[in-house]
Amino acid sequence: MEQFSDYIVYVDESGDHGLQSLDPNYPVFVLAFCIFHKRYYSDVVVSELQKFKFRHFGHDLVILHEHEIRKEKGDFTLFRNREQKQAFLGELTGIIDTSRFILASCVIEKNRLTQQQKESENPYHLALGFCLESLYQLLVEKGQEDRLTHVVVEKRGRKEDDELELEFRRICDGKNRLNQTFNFNIRFADKKANSAGLQLADLVARPVGLHIMRPEQPNRAFETLKPKFYCQGGRHHTGVGYEQWGLKRFPRISEGPR
Image (cartoon, rainbow, N blue to C red; front, side, top):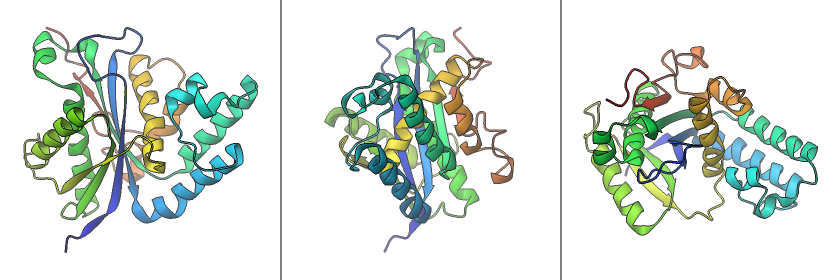
């Protein structure tokens, strides 16, 4: 019988992974891996999010989507004024702040890709490779690399999901920059799945992209995430040394269109 790792990974994205058109207001694609210890996730994270929903909606069926919250759509038309919305966001940020998870992300700066890269690369697949490599390195540190780790992503469409699964398995079979095989399995979740992990991944992806685009602009959400990034110095050096570790950028800042 397969031995499962102690960790579970939830994945979400921000931005369009296509290269046909470029949104000048958000010319990046972000992939975020939220990595949880299973016991802590089930005992604490799920419970805290459910209690948050009961307080604000009276039930726990609401699915927290960053876009809908920001645009006040669907269930999030409840805000009567700016103060009420800020209080809601402040409480939600507090849950993210106190939740213990490790963040591995990759930002593809589509506006900086060369023409050759645009023709040969898929931003989602590129980011996936970088994030899976970070995940593997983390699991090596935890002594869990030989156990099976599940990576949960949202369904997007049959064609896209088939292509993603093929790329995922190709990377795990050794076609990666570490030349290692990864004992990972991909699981696809319906967009309506009320998964606490997927909702948290959805909430963290956009602040990462905004930080890369406008690093000088105040970004409270990103500041909350900084201590969570997988970093070079391990758990005793959280908040520093995460660039090109838990926060990877492509092209690297020294690279660019030629």
